[in-house]
Amino acid sequence: MKDTAAPAASTSGQKGRPTLLVPFTRAAHEHIEPMVDVTQALGATSVAMGPWDVPAYGYLRNIVLDIQASGGSGAGVTATEDSPWSAISEIALIDVNGAPIVGPFSGYDLYLANKYGGYAFGSDPKATPMYSAVSGTGGNWRMLLRVPVEISAREGLGALPNANAASTWKLRITLAPSNQIYGVAPSTLPSVRVRAYLDAWSQPPQTDLKGNATAQQPPAIGTTSYWSKTTIPVNSGFNTLRLPRMGSLIRNLIFVFRDGSGTRSGGATGFPDPASLYWDTRLLKTYGRDVWRHEMFRKTGYSGTAEAVNGLDNGVFVEDYIHDFDGKLGGELRDQYLGTTQSTRFEISGNFTSSGTLTVITNDVAAASEIFVS
Image (cartoon, rainbow, N blue to C red):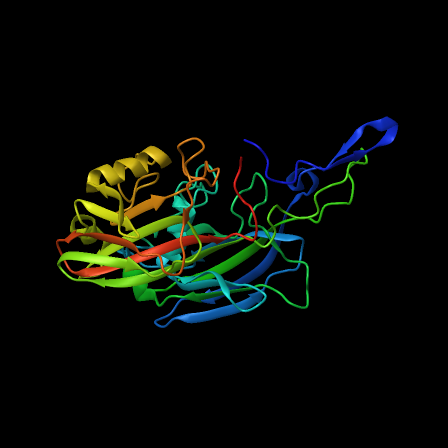
C-alpha cells in the first residue's frame, strides 16, 4: 500500500544524495498518559461527570477508557440486555470549538463503534482479558473502550492537533441509573471507577538521525472523522427510512433495530428480510437478513454465538465502506467511501415485522484535502 504521507519532495543533500521527506508515523512516536481517575457510586439516578480537559500533547488519536464497577454485594443479580455498556447513558468528545466529534451517544453505541469501526485487530471489546460481564453475585463488571479520533494508524490520518493548553478538547460521561444496568440489582450497588488515557502522536523533530527532513503533521491535516447517531421510529409493515447525516464521505453505518418492547433480541427477527439500501434512488444492495449477517462475519471473523465473545450482536446490521484492501473491516484504501452531499438521499427500506426504533450510528469523514491511496 502506498503511503499518503508526502512521499515526494527531494532536495540535494550531502554528496549529491537526495534527502527524502520522512513520513509522519515514522518520525513521530506513540504516546499514552493518564488524564482522569475518578470514582462515583451508582444510584437510582444518572450522574453527570466532567467535562474533563484532554491534556495538550501533539496530535490526538483516541481516548482510552477503563471503567470498572466494584464493591457491590448480593446474590441473584441479573443484567439488562446492553450491560455493562449501558452503564454509560451518554458520552461525548468535544473539540476545541465546542462541537462533538464522537457522540453524544450511549456506551452501547461506543461498544459497537469499537467492535465494527475497523480500527484494530481483535476489536471485540468482550475479547480483552480485562473485560468482565456483570457478575451474578455482587453485580461487578469491567469494560475497556476507545473513543476514536484517528482513522488510520498506518499514516496517522485523522489524528488532530492537540497542542494548545489554553484551548482543550473535552470529554464528558454520564453514568446511567442502576436500572439501566441491572434487571435485578445487587443489594449493595457497586462504585464505578472511571480511568481515561490520552492516546496521541508526539510532535516529530525537524529532522531524523540521518538529517532527513520529517513530515511535521499527519497527512491531510484537519481531516476529521465523526461518529454520531440518529434514532428513527419504525411502524410495523413496509418502511422507507431516510438517513439524515449526509454531506461528507460515509465510512461506516451501523443499524440497530429494537422492537416495541425496546429489545434487540426482538429486533433481530423484526428487521426486514430482505432489506434494501438506496443511494439517490439508485439501488445499491438488497440483503437477505442472514446473507447480511454472513457478510458481517466474512469481514470481521466474528463466528461465536450471538452476543457472546467474538459473536455478532442481535438486531445489529453493519454496512461498511472500509474493506477494499484485504476484505476485512479496516483494510481500507478509502476508495469505497461513499460520497454524499447535503441533498443526497440515502434510504433503507423493507418490511419490518414489528414496530420499534432504528438507531443509525454514522461514521462520516470530512476530508481536508486528498485522502485516497493511489
